[in-house]
Length: 362
Image 1: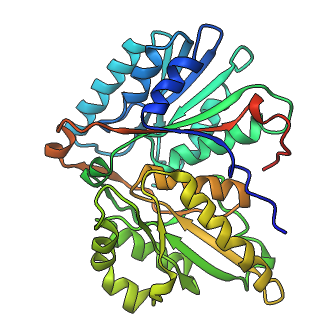
Image 2: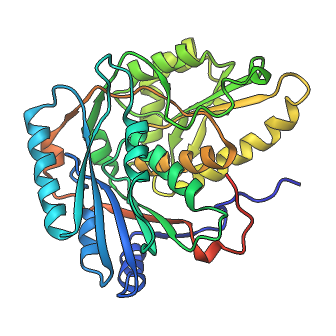
């Protein structure tokens, strides 16, 4: 029998319970390192504001993702959010992270891991990573590094991930697709192993509007044997899954050749739903294809940060490759971004003293 997933029974909170958890848990004996994106995203400061109102002792690493030729409006918004977070947490350090090298190679993940590895952790009781305004190429390597460093070695440092999310804002942020697909830093998985050369590749792309070019380039890069698109359901917009399926109908029918029975539905606001779904798919495939070259699941999260977090948990637990096309920039529908949209909250307690009796290892 396959053992239950590492985070199947993890500690998680949603919406108002997140706010209650912050006020009750982060008290005066907690020394917290807060890692967050100081970007243009309207949700950049939401978690920081809640932590600043707690009684915990705070210091912060504010990450600014540097991409070539940013729009002045986005740069202005990012600077404003950085100023707000700097005022909220006086003990802070701003980390500018170059996403691309001079030859356009993607170096953001490697750069951010190097930066946070130099941070002293001796007096820290809790590390809070707010991925609300961090890209997949930055947030995934950060969390992988922290989990690997503080897992299974007797450490009592607690690692938390928070997301302030709103699907409407997700759709208002449109990445500008880069040219060269690859793997998120630290998430190549078993892709390059000779033993996996003949594996049955199953691609699990998370569908989102405005990602047609990105998805086509990823499909060509992976060349999967089968594709199982991930659609949000239940969702704030109950018809969103149907609308996305219609939007990508040509790709699903003619290019990806998707059997409608292979479409994956996962909750838009609960990362553990997608996490458990991926594990349920991976377990039997490993057995079925064990005698014929093996099975390889390839994830491509995009759009919803909450669903991306579910993919991250599965990728960490099963060492799955995460294929990604790093955006060279972003466009923002400011009419939506400036609207008074109340974000929802998600907290997942990834590692720490509450799990010390649990067998670990990633």
